[in-house]
Length: 362
Image: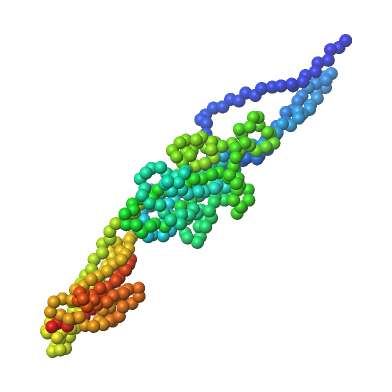
């Protein structure tokens, strides 16, 4: 009897030889979550000297989602602000290192709120606290332009700026406010629609070949200084600091003899002469305004105030103001104290306001 030999390939092993340094993959180079990976083995054998071939069944699985990202403060030091400033912002950067496009949910916290900072160094909270995403990607908060409140469809390895925006109180004794940004990974897939927070599925036993498992691969803090690996959350912190406590406000005062009743061309300081005093209040600090500015000027001895001569306004380089008070300024001659009171209010950074009045020499 002739013996027939069947040459079936039942199982095998693969040996891979590699040389050179290993290179870390970026998220964009990693296989995208949801990609189906299929594999079919080929089989050769012979029957009575005749070569035959067949294939194995196909084994398939889908690539799971490896969720990871970074969130950092994207500025040097604290944001320098002034009292009563509106729309002050701190900057953060979120980078998606997941092997797939993601949405991210954003929440802002201040000291004293669960999940916020516990540094104990700040002494005020901002009002009207908001979070906005850098829609036009210019790295600067633009009111009315940057209006998105969540990160929408951020591609692998892509980064985007996030701003915490708020108003600074007017309290004179405040110094610093701390804020925290919490970022939570969410599902993507629909542009303009906020995804829901992802829930890890890799905690279940086994692996479903046809299901995209969600695997948290981050190792960020929980916001309270405790490291919790694989929670799908990231935190970053920033501060606002009151930067300017004083400005270079100066008042330059001059006197000009307008008339003396004797000399038309070159009037002198004679009894009965009319003298105009001019005061130019200048704020040489460009980055901060002087608020609540009030000038009080006693009428000099041996002179009499000329009724209705007080003028307050923005000068045209000199103090040639008509005797009028323009809004928003107010002022008056105070009879009991025999003084001029000029309520200038705010002198903006680099701005100048003029005050003038006239007296006659007794």
